[in-house]
Image 1 (cartoon, rainbow, N blue to C red):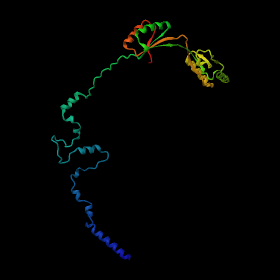
Image 2 (cartoon, rainbow, N blue to C red):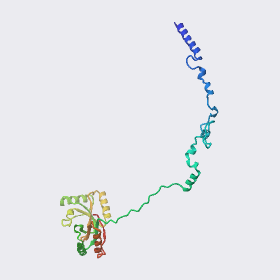
Image 3 (cartoon, one colour):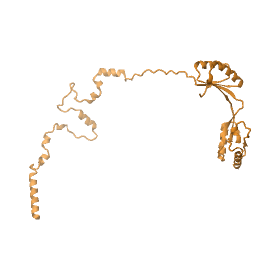
Image 4 (cartoon, helix red, strand yellow):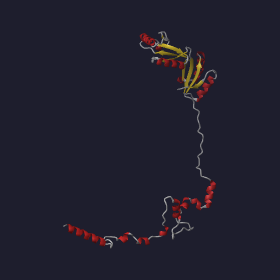
Amino acid sequence: MKLKLLFWLLLVGNVVLFGLPRGYFGASATERREPQRLTEQLHPELLSVLPANSEKLASQLRAQPAPGAPASAEGAPAAAPAAAATPAASDPAAAAQATSAGPATPATPATTAPQVAAVTPSCTEVGNFTAADARRFSAQLASLNLGDKVVQKLTQDVTSHMVYIPPQDGREGADRRIAELRRLGIGDFYVIPDSFPNPALRSGVSLGIFRTEEAAKAYVSQLISRGVRSARIIARRSGAGKQVFQLRDLTPEARSALDNIKSAFPDQEIRGCSA
């Protein structure tokens, strides 16, 4: 059995070896080497093997026309990318004109300076008047018939700043705060009496009076470092106040009349204010 199988394998192998060179199973070995294609090549002399870094040489070879290739009317190669990239070079007159004219600049539209209209402040403040001057100014101002556009206010100058603990639970609350201050080693204080002009501060605990707000803030920082965290600052104002007048939404005519009235009070200042 094995001999028969070996016989048939040898027979098939001989048939294949016999028919393969003769093309019985497709192209012959001679045709696979394609010797006839060497005779069919066009211009094999133009083929050249260049190294990888010969880009300049390759560009020169591409620029050379092939034998028999058609030339342009001027005798230049049919494909001239350099000439196409610079159309002005084909026209010397145009190139000279473009060079003398210089680079083109876009036209810049003329700009005009914006006109700024004069804006009258919506709120004008005049003062500080004494009581007598305020009465005279108010009498002259009444001739303008401004109605509710005029507001008269009393202002007071800040004379000092007080560091205090706000009142809570009346006198009993003040006593508790005094005990706490003594426990923290703070002895410079006094209880604000019930006769104090500002009722919101009565039974509060004053911790000191300072001329400037910066000094009052510095003392509050010291109190916080010692454990007192409820201290506040309030500005103290002079008893004799000054009068100011605020006038809103004046027309140009009313503003001109106001300037005339104010000229009789040269010591007073006229200024803008928040409406």
